[in-house]
Length: 223
Image 1 (cartoon, rainbow, N blue to C red):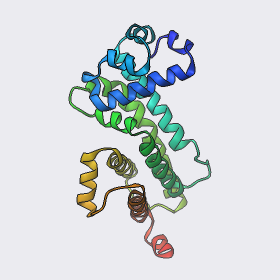
Image 2 (cartoon, one colour; image 1 turned 30 degrees about the horizontal axis):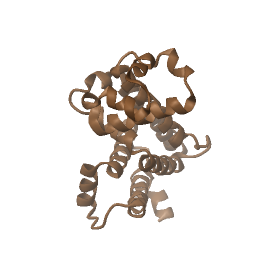
Image 3 (cartoon, rainbow, N blue to C red; image 1 turned 120 degrees about the vertical axis):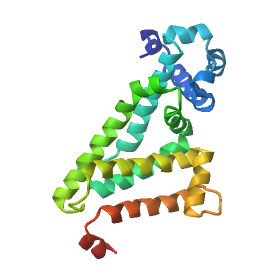
């Protein structure tokens, strides 16, 4: 966590430090990020960064947790308690895609945590990141089975894992050249992946998830 001194500086200064740190970590990775360069970008002294954070590791963890909080507000903040599984999946995927396009550095940082040499951060971050989403999706799937809108033979744990995996890969395809090429290859997309083509593919992804989960009779009624 940041030192108490970080909370005492002006909000716009805190925002600048966190955003510039996120951009630099996303571009360079943890090991290659230089604190002096970060200080210059954030318009603070290098010494000030160590007044705010114990170490570069502490700064990295703080930026990751800040990114997680921003993402959850953007993606889950508008969900209504009475929405069923399908409406929530539609909302989560669309808000997540919008967040990724507006804040690509946060998705790139998420991907960076999976790299070799980042195990120390995965041990401290991944359960916090994934546990909330896993529990949320599993609860929705169980309720969906109970309400008869999800097939009774669905493996809840596996279905939650697959839905979130598709979500992560789709967001990665919006910000990573590697994943963009991969998406274009599999989906046979000839044109550039822009906001319009991404939305078209997202519509198909959401529909495919619904067809996978809905009972056969419900699929026929809504076809």
